[in-house]
Image (cartoon, rainbow, N blue to C red; front, side):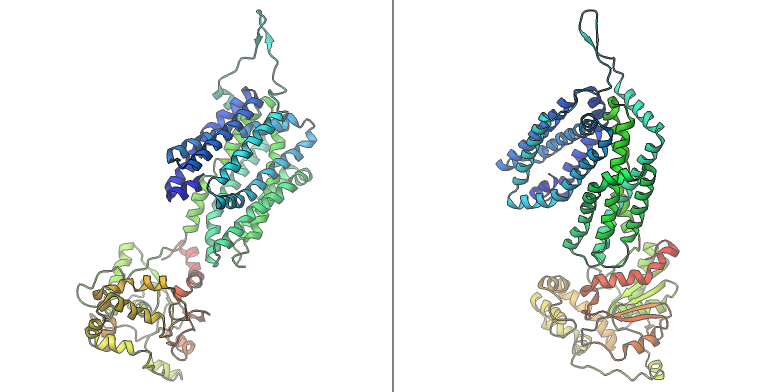
Length: 605
């Protein structure tokens, strides 16, 4: 239902409201529903709740077909559906004990129920997507049919109406039946909780399930982030997440045998051990597909624990209390689960704070108020940014002009730069040191760098030539095309439209030429450049080989320019614009280069 709301309204917020309404209704009624199940005719309660769910589905289907559905109707029907499920669950749990008389068959019965649940979870989502592709109302038509069928089967099943151990009604003096006096529902709930608390083994298993549910929910978002970091697309992510359903179904089919072989204590220890080891194994660096294997093992082990809990409760608990016990155990097991996604999101976000500023005159930053566009001015701005963010030190990464600014910053303010990341072959200008190391001077490439002379010596004339937004866009787009700075077709039309958008503004384009004027000596500087000395901080160098702008003897020069260099590493398939062409490789390399900072400082920028 929430996905349909999202499709109809385009609002994730409204979809969340509908999903939340169903969850709130379910949680709010679950405890009293367990008490009522113990009081009422269980067969009639089950048939009524399942029939009402069929009615809700029928109404929703009719509204979708007629096209008159509104958000408030979705919310109302979601609440009703949540109420139905709150009653159906406890009755199903109590019915298994009432129908399966020999206790030796309880393992098989609960294992079948567990398998049915996991099979539905595995088949349901893709089947729902397939049916939705046939038409928006089709999944709900099928839902209605299945709910009606379930109602019919419940009516034909021998669902016990009353607990077998309930005291029979006595006769009053007037001949009418007199049933035992019921205590308040609150007192009965307290009595159930007290009984469960006294069952030491069951109490510990419930606590373990709470923690496992919390960790399971917390692992989902970091897992999705992990697959994405390994260049996994939506198809791979979906396949990896299918490991939950595959392992759960296999575990449910085996749970009857496993739960008979291992006593509850050893089973709990085995499940916790497998869960922890498999969860840790998802982080092994074996590709985007790898996490599906440990996920299968995680969910392979947990159904057996669910079956054992159900069997223990069915054998130990008074049948007249089973509805309440099921509600209490379900609430206990689910108590921490809503915190899982919140915790997982926080863990996935735990790491480095990142700031990606536009230099003055570039992107969305203001033009220079003093007219200076040199390294000293750029880095005065960056130090001000670090101060405003409250960062004493930072790892600084740069590309092209940004790399030279980062080099200057590392030499100008060594106390503020922890490490350096250079994303091309930029390096300090050290002709004497290179010569002393036996490195010959580089070969000039005038045909490639013709733009530098025009932008640095004739900036105003060039801007005058580029007198329309289309010409300015075309001029910038050439740097991503025929100049051979990157592999062919590295940038789509949509990419070029985004990258050239800032330069539609003629003033913004003119400001971008200022740095070239500094290089050519036609613009004054606010202070000397500090790119005439080696960088002493540890420096990671990544270079894209698919470009014609590379200098000569890159590795030898890096060894001189960066005494603590890591690399240079060549990134296949990348050209000059590596952060755009290979963002996943760049991000993973930087995290690996700086990962120890998280352990030693608890975080770094």
